[in-house]
Length: 362
Image 1 (cartoon, one colour):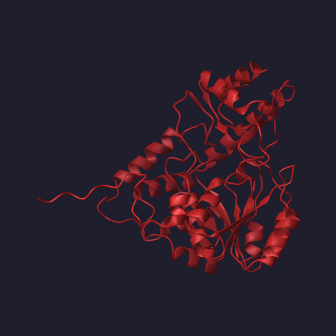
Image 2 (cartoon, helix red, strand yellow; image 1 turned 45 degrees about the horizontal axis):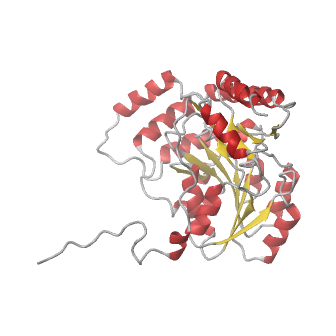
Image 3 (cartoon, one colour; image 1 turned 120 degrees about the horizontal axis):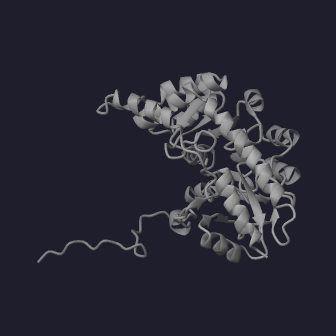
């Protein structure tokens, strides 16, 4: 009598799984249904309806039985034209988090992934999953880059990949350009990633520095200012040589026809982006100003489309906001961020509801 093989449970996973994968927890996010969603730094406005209709029309005209471009070649050309970049130095993937994984494969496996603490969780997650040597240097008390300590690590270790986020996530801090340049200058043999996911909200732009240094890249996304998080697309701007090596790790046909159609339309008519960015900047100033005199909570300065709210009791404040139909992101377990919640800038009405909820905290 034959017996079907048993299916391993989560606790009884196959022995062939690498220990590094077993040891790492899943991506730290649990979706919560709430009327006001301020927990993922998304643009509160959908892609414009008229542009969505154009993208859908373009998608319907394309054959779905054919593979898309091998390396998103048409999108690379369009992004290059938009950014004023050599198309040979553009790499496109389904979200900038995919590029982070590929960059860790490129320069981190068997080498070093160097970043700060706290930092964007995907940097550390991918380093741990891929078995890279993860080194995190604590931010300074004002959330600025620890330039001297990072420089010492760069000079004492074999080259790998260095992640610098501008503006920084999860703090929203923007560093002085001289500090970023100093770190790039100290890392001529490293792959240096300048993650500019939120650059539209800070009016910062490190493309000139990337042009000067063939080992440096700017990581950008369509998920935030472009209102296209659901489409999933990110890209890197770098030298032709570095791009060619990254492209070796990118799966063939990795950008689908829907994404391509939506991005083509967005790049043809990008005017909506600046209007939405300007509203977010104005609302950020209004919200931070309204919280300036709160008796117990402190809104920390930010140059992104989110900010940190330091509270006496992060768990209690988080639950209070949920009871008012508002979901934010807890960050209070991170280094330097005791009591902190991360709050995205929403629509004016959503921000008003948030401010009313904060006013109830004592």
